[in-house]
Amino acid sequence: MGCKLFVFMTNLLVISLVSCNPCSRQQSINITSGDLQDGNSILHGGLVYKTGQWYEVEEDGIVSRFGCPCLESNRVCIRKCCNPRHMYLGYTCKEPPEESLLVFNPKVHKGKDLLNVTASLHFFYLHGLQCDKYLVDPSVDPEVLYIQENGTLLEYSQINDTAQWVAPSEYCVDMMTDDRDSIRMIALICYQNTNHADDSPALYISYAVGLLLSVLFFLATFMVYAFIPELRNLHGMCLMAYCAGLIVAYICLAYLKMHFGEDGEDTMTGCIVIAFIVYYSFQTSFFWLNVMCFDIWRTFSGYRGSTSTKKREMRRFAVYGVYAWGMPALLTACTLSMQYAKLPYWVIKPGFGDRKCWFSNWLSELVYFYPSVLALVICNLVLFTITAHRIRSIRQETAILKGSKSTSKLKQDKQRYSLYLKLFIVMGINWTVELVSFAVGGSNWYWVLLDISNIMLGFFIFIIFVWKKKVRNLARRRYRSIRGLPPITSEFRKSTNVTSTAVTEESRLSSDDAHVRLKDMN
Image (cartoon, rainbow, N blue to C red; front, side):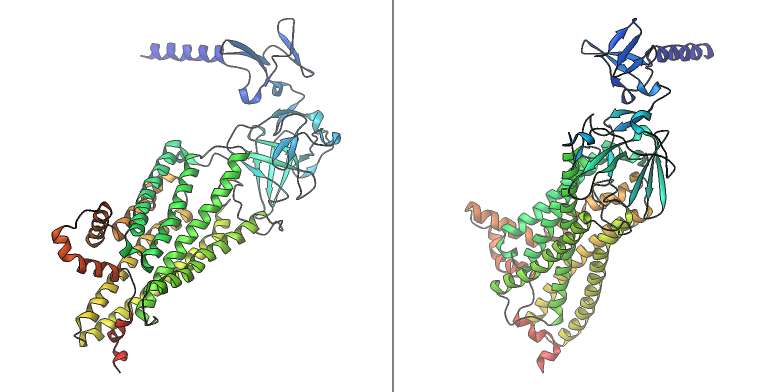
């Protein structure tokens, strides 16, 4: 056994020595066009690559030569983001209009101290950077970049007074100019290896598929309430608006999950746009949930009009829409302005697209996302508590009254309260889980079961609001009506009762409810 192991290790060592190149492809440049001298040296770009400093690669029958300039003892390799004679004009690599800008000669430091070193003579520039990376722009980010004599980059954060050392192979630098500032040096830095094993493509794709499956349930709920006239009342329209926001948010989240790890200017621009769409969509869902909580509180508080006509419901829905769509739009506009405003370094910015599509760090998320969510959750909890107390009082009052109509209406509105309470509990559990995972952190594998609850939100809402006997009966009747089929006999006998129950369950108390309250008897 020991002999076989020795032979295996020896063969493995021989194979590795035979196939090993003097440097990796990332640390190489193509020198196929160079001059071959004496059969073992290649002159390319003013450098002589001796034996052991270059290698050949055959791909599709074509032999190419690659040199290893970083093996030269008198030159240090760093990476330039754009090609030679190019720089960033805006966020695109282009040839600069002025000849003086063609020479890339950044400052060289020892720590934070400036050295009298000419970068163009001290460094050898490799071009491009193949990794999942983020942008550091000192004119936008409160960070300072220091290129060290040995090629290492010091990334210093002015917010929390911390420094990060980045290896030469993990970043690239270049000059940039735009309408925001004068010419400055920016850096693209590879994400550090802190993502655990959870960032496997399989996990992200599975999460995206789960989100899209949940979208189907949101869409089914939306369509049922849209196509059944009896359900298109104020409550139904609010629920449709709530589902619409989550449909958009979940689709965009699925897109981000499926495109995780891709880079490039177009991808990053799309990433930022989608991040703002997700931000707005989630905010609208929370505000519409708040509207539904307010509406059920209003139903039991006695603040209602004399009639409950379709016109009044549409007018009230318009008022609710101004609030539930307008407030998220205002929050998104504020976040957008803070994202692109030129502010002092100590001001916390959203940082969409800096290190990832979503907020750049937990502090930005804490400032720009969670305050409104927390405020709405607390408000909803207060409204539900007050409503529960009011239901108890009304139940005691109706015990004195023997009117079947008032008792029936109370029961129907209590059912609607129960629906909203279930929705609030489901949303509360999901976002409590989100807050816990946000605070604790760690590998995504730790939170798989908890993330499933977020993915299952669409299914839960479908079960709560659609998968009920009364709604199924209405859907069956609507389908037969559209197809021109006669109603089922047993269903026809119950249609009046079913329709009345379903409609009143999903709408507010009418003027006939006035005698439910004891004080209305006086």
